[in-house]
Length: 104
Image (cartoon, rainbow, N blue to C red; front, side):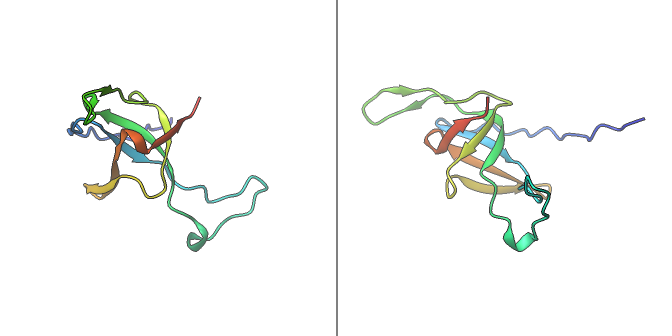
Protein backbone atom coordinates (compact mmCIF):
# COMPACT_ATOMS: atom_id res chain seq x y z
CA UNK A 1 0.00 0.00 0.00
CA UNK A 2 1.44 3.40 -0.94
CA UNK A 3 0.82 6.51 1.06
CA UNK A 4 0.30 9.80 -0.74
CA UNK A 5 2.30 12.70 0.67
CA UNK A 6 0.07 15.20 2.43
CA UNK A 7 0.02 18.56 0.71
CA UNK A 8 -0.58 21.62 2.81
CA UNK A 9 -3.04 24.20 1.62
CA UNK A 10 -1.56 27.68 1.51
CA UNK A 11 -4.07 30.39 2.33
CA UNK A 12 -2.36 33.24 0.51
CA UNK A 13 -3.64 35.33 -2.38
CA UNK A 14 -0.92 37.18 -4.30
CA UNK A 15 -1.55 40.84 -5.04
CA UNK A 16 -2.12 42.10 -8.59
CA UNK A 17 0.69 41.21 -10.95
CA UNK A 18 2.19 38.41 -8.82
CA UNK A 19 2.08 34.60 -8.74
CA UNK A 20 2.82 32.29 -5.80
CA UNK A 21 5.27 29.54 -6.77
CA UNK A 22 6.45 26.37 -5.07
CA UNK A 23 10.04 25.83 -6.27
CA UNK A 24 10.72 22.27 -7.38
CA UNK A 25 13.73 20.38 -6.06
CA UNK A 26 16.96 20.74 -8.03
CA UNK A 27 18.12 17.63 -9.86
CA UNK A 28 20.67 15.65 -7.85
CA UNK A 29 21.54 13.27 -10.67
CA UNK A 30 22.58 13.95 -14.25
CA UNK A 31 20.98 12.23 -17.24
CA UNK A 32 24.03 9.96 -17.47
CA UNK A 33 23.55 8.83 -13.83
CA UNK A 34 26.19 10.92 -12.04
CA UNK A 35 25.10 12.15 -8.61
CA UNK A 36 25.80 15.82 -7.92
CA UNK A 37 26.99 17.06 -4.52
CA UNK A 38 24.89 19.72 -2.77
CA UNK A 39 27.60 22.30 -3.43
CA UNK A 40 27.15 21.83 -7.20
CA UNK A 41 23.40 22.37 -7.17
CA UNK A 42 22.21 25.74 -8.31
CA UNK A 43 19.07 27.46 -7.12
CA UNK A 44 16.14 25.81 -8.94
CA UNK A 45 14.38 27.90 -11.58
CA UNK A 46 11.43 25.58 -12.06
CA UNK A 47 8.27 25.80 -9.95
CA UNK A 48 4.61 24.86 -9.65
CA UNK A 49 2.08 27.70 -9.70
CA UNK A 50 -0.04 27.66 -6.52
CA UNK A 51 -1.97 30.95 -6.78
CA UNK A 52 -2.30 33.91 -9.14
CA UNK A 53 -3.02 37.54 -8.32
CA UNK A 54 -5.40 39.80 -10.21
CA UNK A 55 -4.46 41.25 -13.58
CA UNK A 56 -1.66 43.80 -13.40
CA UNK A 57 -2.56 47.31 -14.53
CA UNK A 58 0.43 49.07 -16.08
CA UNK A 59 1.22 52.76 -15.66
CA UNK A 60 -0.36 53.38 -19.07
CA UNK A 61 -3.60 51.72 -17.89
CA UNK A 62 -3.24 48.50 -19.88
CA UNK A 63 -4.36 45.25 -18.19
CA UNK A 64 -1.72 42.52 -18.22
CA UNK A 65 -3.00 38.98 -17.60
CA UNK A 66 -0.98 36.23 -15.88
CA UNK A 67 1.10 34.22 -18.37
CA UNK A 68 0.22 30.96 -16.58
CA UNK A 69 -2.52 29.20 -14.65
CA UNK A 70 -2.68 27.35 -11.33
CA UNK A 71 -0.88 23.95 -11.35
CA UNK A 72 1.31 24.92 -14.34
CA UNK A 73 5.02 24.10 -14.12
CA UNK A 74 6.95 27.23 -15.03
CA UNK A 75 10.52 28.43 -15.42
CA UNK A 76 11.32 31.78 -13.84
CA UNK A 77 14.19 34.28 -13.82
CA UNK A 78 17.14 33.16 -11.72
CA UNK A 79 17.08 36.20 -9.45
CA UNK A 80 13.38 36.95 -9.84
CA UNK A 81 10.81 36.91 -7.08
CA UNK A 82 10.85 37.10 -3.30
CA UNK A 83 11.24 34.02 -1.13
CA UNK A 84 9.07 33.45 1.94
CA UNK A 85 9.16 30.58 4.42
CA UNK A 86 5.89 29.18 5.73
CA UNK A 87 5.92 26.21 8.13
CA UNK A 88 9.55 25.50 7.19
CA UNK A 89 8.85 25.34 3.44
CA UNK A 90 10.11 27.92 0.94
CA UNK A 91 7.75 29.62 -1.53
CA UNK A 92 8.32 32.39 -4.03
CA UNK A 93 6.26 35.43 -5.01
CA UNK A 94 7.21 36.33 -8.59
CA UNK A 95 6.02 39.10 -10.90
CA UNK A 96 4.19 38.11 -14.06
CA UNK A 97 7.25 39.31 -16.00
CA UNK A 98 9.55 36.92 -14.09
CA UNK A 99 7.85 33.90 -15.71
CA UNK A 100 9.98 32.85 -18.68
CA UNK A 101 8.25 29.70 -19.94
CA UNK A 102 5.54 27.15 -19.19
CA UNK A 103 6.33 23.45 -19.40
CA UNK A 104 4.08 21.70 -21.94
